[in-house]
Length: 427
Image (tube, rainbow, N blue to C red):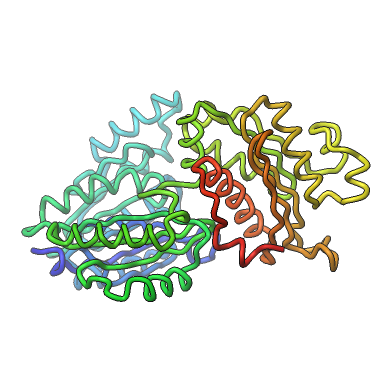
């Protein structure tokens, strides 16, 4: 069977998804990974932890699909029902699976935990089930045929699902009669919106080739531009499209694949043997967090300072009390002093400093909510700018932190042109 002929459905289960306590990111991840094989998801259903409803959906969906991926309900608690319900749907018994037991013993042994009855529940699988390895978590995945439909059951923990999908996708590729030659190039950008990017492409590249599929995935703070081709013959056309995109807004392109702003900044710093420090007020350490979540960040990032109160700006970073009194914490003079103080105390080569009004309160007519002063650069070349992001507090912090990283990225690359978002956000 070819990828386009394969009928695939997704069944997600969990009361926490239905209540909104957990946001479903797993179905998007599964769909993106399947798209690498040119496989499309035909239908997706989400149900709570209800035996009758889960059994009805499993039977109905398996009857209409070639492949059904069930996500969630494999854990050790009483509301994890997937294995039990699938056994009932197929009319088989449920028992401890030797491979699953061995996996649990090794998992608990590495953590020096007892293998208790609750954990053992994860090894109780339908008779005839084939194990799908889980390299991270305690609950193995498994698969079983329901009529003519292959049912693959996966855990709901996003990290575990991601780790298992490599094997699942590779196995699907081997089974397809005509494996797809689909190739996806993902370009990560910052400072562009979907509508603006689409209009720029429509105006700047009116002869976009039909064999190169253009897609966007908006997020905060980055936006992904996706170029997909279904044959190697279309790769030259995609390369031309990429070159044209770089001409249109190349300075907004951070990198390829899953590249993050923090990752790119650290890479540029390492190339120069340089270090970076941060002085944060309104972002509360988010810039430092975006850097330290990258493995190996300690090579280029040694210290960051969260100086929320004015007294701490003075005591920790040496900001002048008279400047704070006359200019206010959200000012060019203060944010530049924060940056210079951080550079001195951390002994770093570059700094990012931010001070702003995240809201929802605290604004004035002169400095409304959403106002932020940023400073970035070195002792010899310290730059600053005032921007406004009148959005809710969390998004404000995210975008300000990203803007700080983006500006130091641009300085490290020697990009002197202002980003497009300056014309929209400059105060």
